[in-house]
Length: 124
Image (cartoon, rainbow, N blue to C red):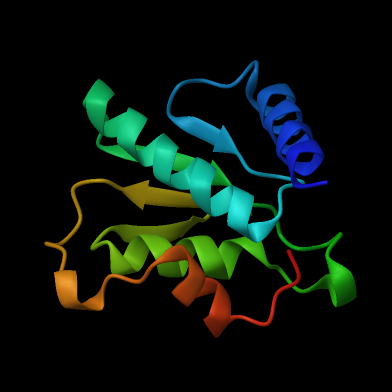
């Protein structure tokens, strides 16, 4: 079952991003754990390209259970613990703008994916 879920998330991610610019990543319809993995990869790719920022489309949570966003707080927390500056796009609250030239990372405060997920009551 996990392999099928992994294949489905790879397909969904590829479909959502096939027409996106390199500095823009759509994480819609992914579970939190999957979105975190794709976010980490997107940040690494952006740094390799020399980008100074990246836009992560996380959605507003309108289709989440009870309309509560799941991706936005988890992704924001992940990136902030890595010392990155994360802001909401003023034109679209479903987009996080990540400044890759953020403050230095305090390695003692960096959380693992599992630690981040345990701090949120998410089903993934």
